[in-house]
Image 1 (cartoon, one colour):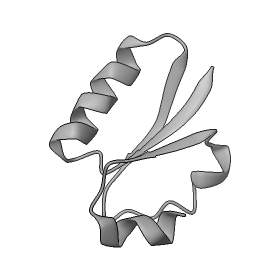
Image 2 (image 1 turned 90 degrees about the vertical axis):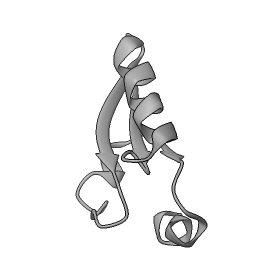
Image 3 (image 1 turned 90 degrees about the horizontal axis):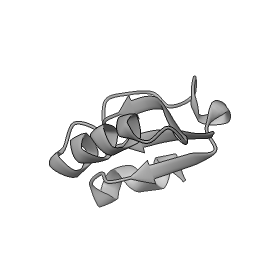
Image 4 (image 1 turned 30 degrees about the vertical axis):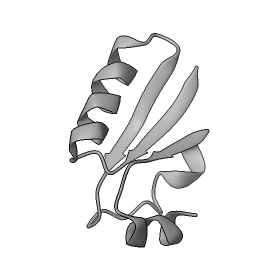
Length: 62
């Protein structure tokens, strides 16, 4: 199972990705985060971070 964090989870695409992930048995959404959230507690647990945030938010996640 692939452990996924959705960055930008409160946006339209982020919400769509959350629904798709919940419907897929091969994916475990371990966090849905947004601009004000701190990733430090979950980033090490993820296999993948899918970023659908604003471009200024992307650099700190990388």
